[in-house]
Length: 290
Image (cartoon, one colour):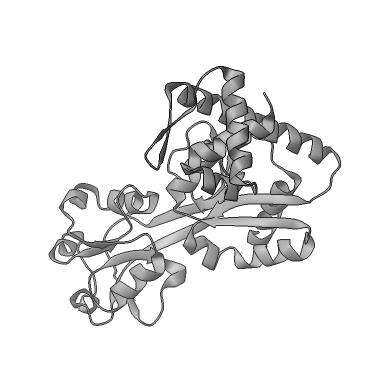
């Protein structure tokens, strides 16, 4: 089978549209249609059902999709291995980070990398840490710089770069701001403003509260730390934020609970060959954090 036909098939399967697939891989729609027709002839089965305006994978298409992703990712890995032999640091680096880390931890490393390796095309995607870890595990990203999971599962490899202490905070006019030493049970009287369900950070926060975790009143939830900070500062509830974000608009609540912190760092795939660009990015992040 021709690799270009498989690439066209994957693009149609993932976008659900011949026209969007054509845009993704920079071909015309007739060219995409021709490649799919050729592939269907080669496998001897129809790969898509055209129902109304929708495109749906057939059973044969679903079977081919899983194998196509594996084949193309293995080919990419082979190409990276061969390119790495030259020692050149070029090409595209596809990686992800969270909004918070991108704003507060990566500007220096990114600037240094761009100035040192101007021939590398940085393709940086912003996403939640959990989504980024899944994308690395699926082979869709070379690496991610995110909040690390508490437990690392195969096929992921994690490396801690930064400790990120967290503090309970309220707005300066919040009732809890006037109490010198807050008992954890007092938090139950006020709504919490926390990261969304299922996020690594939310679990760290709730686990620190022990048996109280299921009694917390969640007033609002968002995965954007800057929004959490704003909502807390205007008095809509209490929250837990990275210590590096706390300013005069917030009051740290001295609460009788264990110190809590996140670990921020790099996530890679155990079986994926990192490009020279990926290795250089990791090296610069380590050096900047040292």
